[in-house]
Length: 373
Image 1: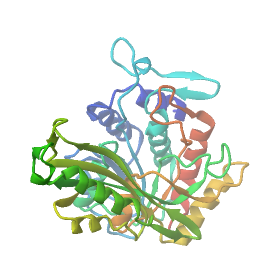
Image 2: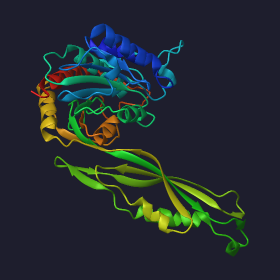
Image 3: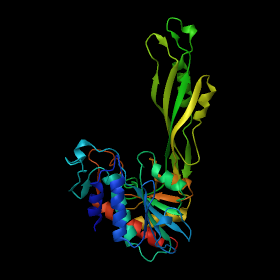
Image 4: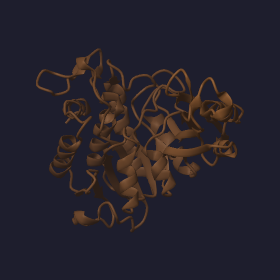
């Protein structure tokens, strides 16, 4: 089966509200086309294992990492809601092929990479490591599937996560991301005392307190670090504000949303806002950053990427959070290698290059054959 055909099959299956049908397809394909232990956990994540020390019992696939080095080829099969133009009358996702590309919701993010990983997992032979294929659920909802799998004990030694890494160093070149930023979303809640606006001194203005907190955030230094010689610089920004109830009432509450792009080992000191009377700070979402700590593994993957293309791939830094952040937090050395280029995902004309999908099949397969040799 060609990677374009498998991608087309996966992309056509709706998976923005319920990933079960896509998970069913992946699980059934793995059972039919691979000689491996296939497992679907209670969260909907799909796993397959093969290699030294792997038996046919699927009940330990997501839990047992013993028996030498283990490498995961990881992705996710959920997608963001499609544009109307990407859905057929029968509810299936529309998939079109033209000019060497596949168009459709999830083609770039990231069913194309999942298809490439499925094929390379099938074709990998003479393994010196335990090879794991995994497709997570609920990545677009905050990497919930990988969080659940890790909580259940899933922690391979190494992982190649198939999120986009193409076009960072040069157009069309599939690079190797050795780090990416995380995201910490939080809310600053300011409370005061309501009063009639004609009697300002009778109240405590929550918007003023929130404004003082915004000034604190504005003056914070952005977090920054270095990974394998590459600077990873985060950011902090106030993105929303909501307060007040009427034009003639001193506001008793005001909420401010803060978006922080985190970096490995560093965080902005947003908690300083709590030194202001009536101000509390709450973290709503914390998607961790990723940094590969095994330079030899990163170089091995870079060598595999170099061998598959005419361009000169590089180690790069990716700006977006992925499941690799959760895996890195569990002790897995990760890199991100995938076909999508910046700007291809989450759009009405989302697409992926078939040539680059074929390239990723070769990269994943070659990495699997070299790990632990």
